[in-house]
Length: 80
Figure 1 (spheres, rainbow, N blue to C red):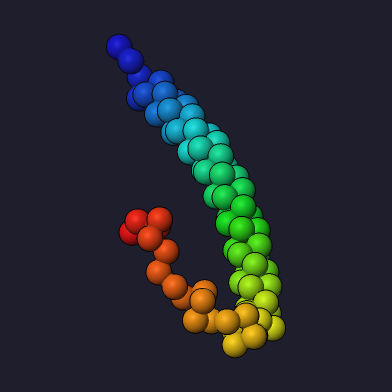
Figure 2: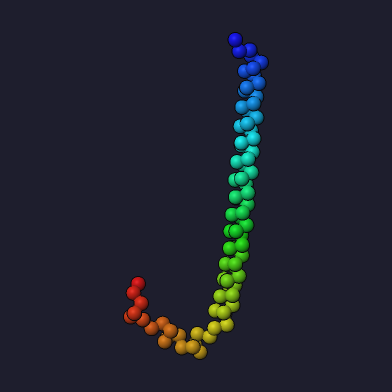
């Protein structure tokens, strides 16, 4: 007959294994999240720099000097 002590030991071993598996998976998910967050922050920073550069260029661009009317002509070869 199985003693209650063996059942208790078995349950403790299973709990310990589940705890270890949980921690391993949690660490892996945390690492993936951190990597993805760093990548997204880098992309956001690059996009903000591009927006800044484009804004500066638009501020410097003189539309009247470069004939805005001509730039806004409909181009038949472009199909929307």
